Length: 325
Image (cartoon, rainbow, N blue to C red; front, side):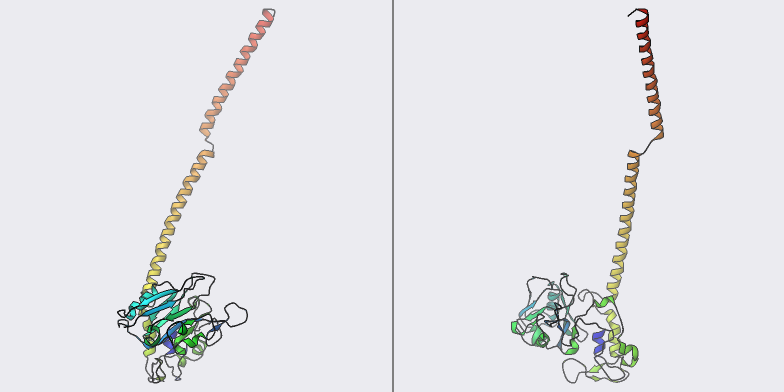
């Protein structure tokens, strides 16, 4: 939404405003960042960068080279992504998204190639930071207008301040890394809350070049508002494979299925626990009928023993008194 809104113009004629508040990880406009909290700026924290040129997914690039991206993991080797003259723009984008580098590629609402950082798997590293972008050829340079030069000398690398100078991207096409996951909170920009005339609903025309509108199209134009509304139907989720509605529907279905599975597992476990409890009681419990039968048996045994002793006693008395022993 912010990307589309920054291209629009409000009723006050101003542009390049966010619609939602954005909390950056750094206060430096160029993204310079203190990564180890020692008080010294030592790196560059960029979340998203877009090229200056509009591309078509179906166009063949007629270029050959290798894009190098660094995974956001400690001690991980750089990932190299080759592209060839017969590839389309879509082929290269898909190859980047399948490389597992925690960077996704897509064409933004202006048709520009965009690279965006994602969540990291290594929790020791910060989320949403693009680490390294390099191209041995011309795809990311003159073709998409993202990097200023090819090869190692022209590579963007976050491990130094001022790395933003390696990019051709206009300021409006660069987003700094957020302090928090932006999906965990949503808040309107204060300027828009104070004055609705600052809502950038109107589109503009790019007269200076650079793929950024600089002159309002005219009052009454609502093209940017329509662009924002149409985001709902754009395949913006899961690496450009699903719309927001598709993603939400799938999420609800998955949640329901997991809930049903959890319920069945609970019921099964509950029944198993009940069976085990009954088995325990059957082993440790007292059966009154069985105990009564045992008591009668023991009583008869006691009586029999008593009679046996009585008989023996009489026998001894007879022997001693009558036989004179």
